[in-house]
Image (cartoon, rainbow, N blue to C red; front, side, top):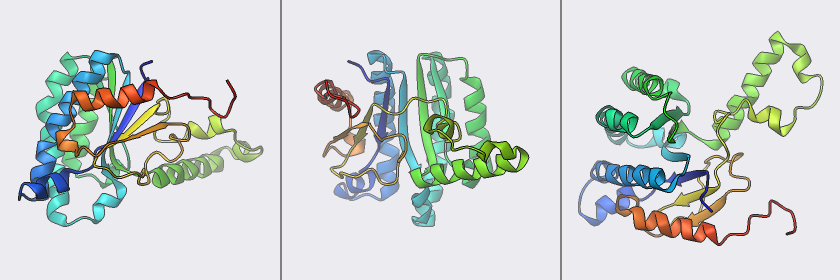
Length: 233
């Protein structure tokens, strides 16, 4: 049983770099190979959606030098990998409060989304400046703004399905499997609505060391899960 949507909290870059006597940006740079391997593996396995928690809303509170370095790294990664992604049938989506990103990165992101929009083999979703609480809050604000134009919107309670249309992930299936690296066992304000019935897999492997065999271990664990969604089988 292959999950349709796998999401990964890519954790441990800083600790990986510290173990090698390097700064945190060294860890972030070396994490790119893990991203490439996971994309290749997801394509090979027939996974249709792979979402990566690349930069959280809370990460803006990190030292300015690290944040600026991450923004430059993201620009470089998208720019250098764009042609290969498109050639391999990968569509890119970027989700989060993108207004906070540098204008040059915003332009690069939107251009890549447009260029890859026709691809259907794998949708790669980068979560940038994202948090679960932000997502739910922005959905509520969208509803309130729309209700000013269409007061009938709030004349009756919204269903869960109707509410989900306002989430930043609208149109994307909820994750079947969430993987978090580095040994931490929490979801850190990530996809709070979408992960209501997601299966969690935690590994001690630090993200820059995460490879296809580690991804396969997560899938093997998922294969053994009995997903009942509150029902009795």
